[in-house]
Image (cartoon, rainbow, N blue to C red; front, side):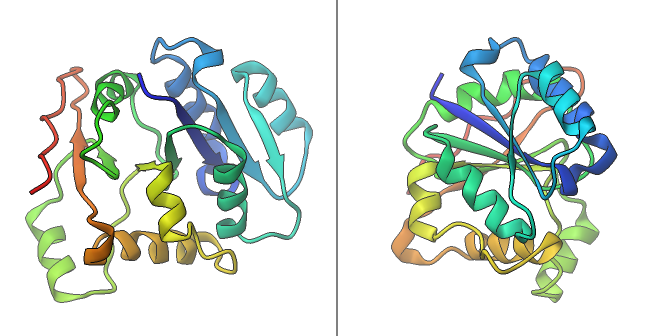
Length: 199
């Protein structure tokens, strides 16, 4: 498995943070092989307790917007792949077992990690309204591509930072030669489809 680092922001996940971490840790990969960076704006007893329980490293950056917090975590890690939580709702542990083999490739720069295909209404909404971006629960990003794209806008906070980043890769500039695949896994642990090869 290529080196992977999870980045989970305490403000994005809120009360669901422990469920996110539990899901990641239940994927069966040894803790020391799967680092988790938890970002936040202030240290507190809750984060300390959660960090000890799930063997995470907390990066506290007071008064910094979400974009800056995620960037700091991304550049702190040396992993080849960054898996970033974008929503409050966690994903089942079975999905991660299906995802990791997908990262052993040089044909993808990013994967949208989701449980289901977008509905017809969601796809129509995306076509009709350029601003109507429906966030996936997680995104897996190759480090080299993340750095070329410039990461998140450090001045944007909460949904604005995530939307800006996702808008940057959805209609990716041709020069990046970006290949994005959707990794789907059902709760029955069904393996996701093989990622498409670059044209």
